[in-house]
Amino acid sequence: MPISLLKLPRLVGVLVVTELEYQEIFLLSTCSSRTNILVKKANIKAPKLSFRLEECYGYNEFKIGFMIDKKIDRIWLHVTSLLHVHELALENIFTLKLGLDYEANTNFDLWSKKNGKFLHRMECANEPTAIQKALQDHINSIFHYSAASQLILSMKCDGSLPNITNVKEIEIKYNTVDAQFLANVLTTYSDPRRLYVRSRIVGDLPKESPFFQVQRIAVRSRCGPDYFHVSFLDSFSMLAFLFSFRISLVETCGWILLP
Image (tube, rainbow, N blue to C red; front, side, top):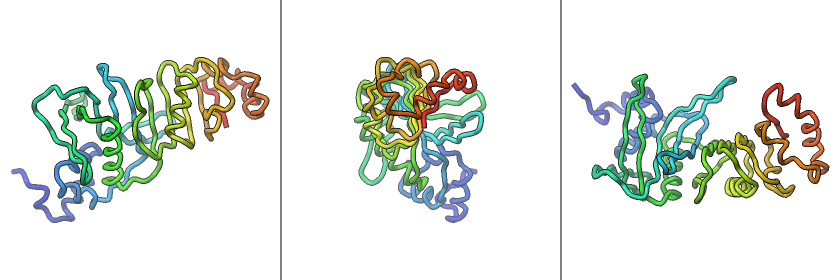
């Protein structure tokens, strides 16, 4: 016999929420103002907030999750996903309410993985930067999150980069990137602590590029030697030192790390 969650004693309702997965908590928080309050009362803490921009069927897909860094690999915990489309294809509309004053009409996709777990995705035709900002604010609110965030770019954006704040770790995984794209990323998300470039960097990076202002940089070995030129190595003594030991670094870890 089903029992209404909101009719349970508040303490019992909070305990139920703490047993849910992150995406279930997110979905519950969007059902009504009462479920939103219940989720916040559960005071759930989350690991590093991570955003991913990928291409899906010719559209931009904006994924949100929490990332747990392990020594060997990383674990992605899905929260929600948003597909930016030109218009909604289905008549069945789900109105997503975020905060006090933001609403978006969406189509809701739900499917089950082979292990029995389900995933969901929302399709939305609203202006992308507005709903991206509203989603981040909503997730920060329900999970009481105020720490730095991570951004993973798996595609080269033709339009605006994701409208998110407090990005301190950036990972770029597109096939190739150039100096202008790197400058756009590092200007949009100023003062990142870490930058991982898994792409091949084509062309020259000027010595005044914001690329060299990042505290910690890791680039794939195959793209390092293509753009490290003597013209600016002289003013970066540590960079020159690492470059001189490029072969041993590549053999041990496949990455060139810049301080």
